[in-house]
Length: 113
Length: 142
Image 1: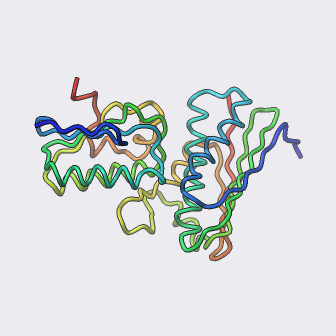
Image 2 (image 1 turned 135 degrees about the horizontal axis):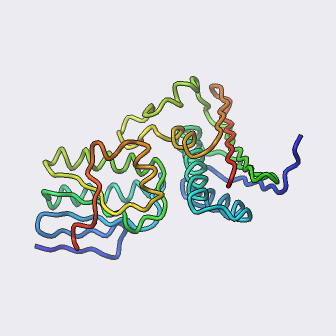
Image 3 (image 1 turned 90 degrees about the vertical axis):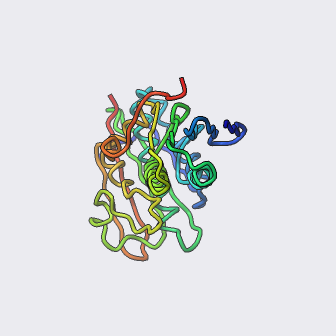
């Protein structure tokens, strides 16, 4: 089953048990609420085995992004899904490293390639 | 006392939609110094943290005004001041502890001050309960 909703931020794709959420643009406190609600409702709807947060199109992220990531990690874990992040830019990576995110969440290349 | 080469002031209401505008305006001003991408990214992040703190914590009960002042000197030092007249911080030292947050939803990381501290060369925070917050940040560009 493949479900695609690509006119929204984040772009959600569900295929082969993997729920991919591609966030577009900046992640700050203002936009985090909407992104959070869309990802959480997709996790509850599709019950994926893997949740992949695609950061390849994120130019800017502050610590609100850390809250967003840790919150989705918790939601995915509660639903029994593995949670991964892929393709952060160097600026985004710096914020992730500051918080030591890589110690609890796997950061990798794009799974869909 | 050193004289600033250039300066700007910005007053904006504490609306979350203004977070991106605030960091973009500061970045546009700093661009006059031809900074590296990393320096711009660090400064944008630090400004975003301070402004978000004012919106989320300082003015959580009512809307207010946020002041942003930026100046730079001939030695390429950038000084940023961000002030609000919100509810203030009772214990600044505790608030600055990494991972500390008063948020109960689990959606705030408590890393705002840690980001400001790491991405800037100097950070000072003054606050008292009900007296707002004043933040001074400094970064010397290469």
